[in-house]
Image (cartoon, rainbow, N blue to C red; front, side, top):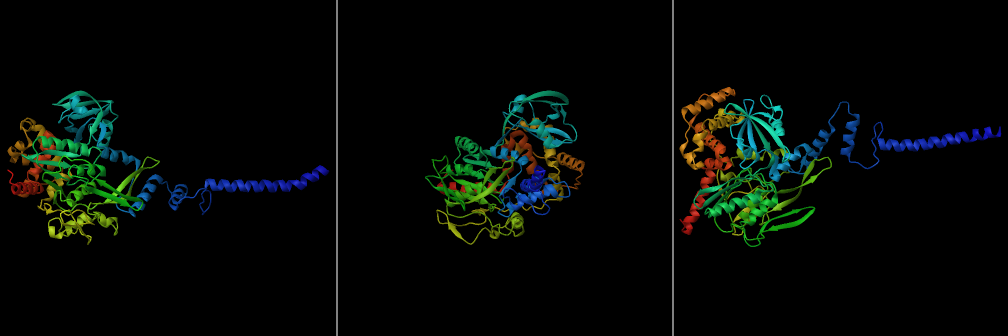
Length: 539
């Protein structure tokens, strides 16, 4: 009986202890599993952004792709900082990295879909496809076991053709109406940033750089040495459309033009102390006339190079005001394979000016800047250029330059404002021009290939009425109605079609040789070079 009374006395106490322990464990479990009705607590401190995403994932009424939602939230947050800090999802990072690396793994061709057929339009010289015997004009029937005739996307074709270096892909192609099997061993395919390098005339070289990747300086040096071996004394460096890239490549290029230990650029940010980049070695082209071409799409690393050359009075800048990007980004890898490109500093030209245009009125207005330049007449009139932030800077020779809105040219060349018919725009939008020039080259390959140089070809080739009728017929197949081509339309299309055809024969070097023959900026650059030669008494 006594024992029973002891149990009765202690039982409530035991139950109380168990309840207390259970409550403590339950409370801890609730913290760790985040179970609550309207208050969300975490065992570790989290940002409101993470709390909201977790709540959406656990509580939202419909199924949501939280990764996509999170990426959008991150991007929106970065837009509040500046226009160039950027979040890169993992699925997009590979293509961007390839572009900056200057190469990728594949078979080394360019193709285009024409009437649901994959046509080879260019073969990289010395690449895997050329070694295997692939030619311009070949048509793919199968890649591996996959038939590629019919409805297939360009992304799917790239997926089939690309692969690790050293791997083999078996293709079935159609050539001269007969199928052939070609095995191609994949390799490293360059993505060159040097689009063209040639002598415009004896003593004057032309180089076009499309971007600043890991291989740009190396390509530039090879092109420069080749031109100098051919007798180059003056250089036209074309940076139009060059949106920038790796800052170090532009600095190395500037070093080839500047002597001594001249300052090229310096960077500085709230969390980064001032860092200077100076000329370190004797350059290959420290003397000699230098002309640099720029336009409204020349940005970032292009402006670093141009700013240094302008501040030291080393080059004549010809063209239109550059984009105005003076922010430096660093890329950080994130745990899920994505990346963050974060603005960490501003760059300053040797005179101390920042080229960055204002972005305090929002990203939308910032992105609309180029449209506004057209609207206010800046693209056609030098007097309409608005590049000044009100602060003057001096070049080494005492000339006044301005910061805060890109680099204004020393000599202005307006944009081509020739009025073209809507049909011409439609021809480009539907890639009818690309298809027509490809078919033209395939039909007339022997004739085009017989010309020794792009210049000889450009002088000789003329489009006949039958050729214009053929273009019109192809346009109608693409549902483009063309009454008749005006004289302006014919001049514009003739220049560009001749350049595109030359590209099949001489690649991008031939393309620019033909296109530059009537290019106003190149013509003005040539005039500048000749005037300098006359002053010096050269012939």
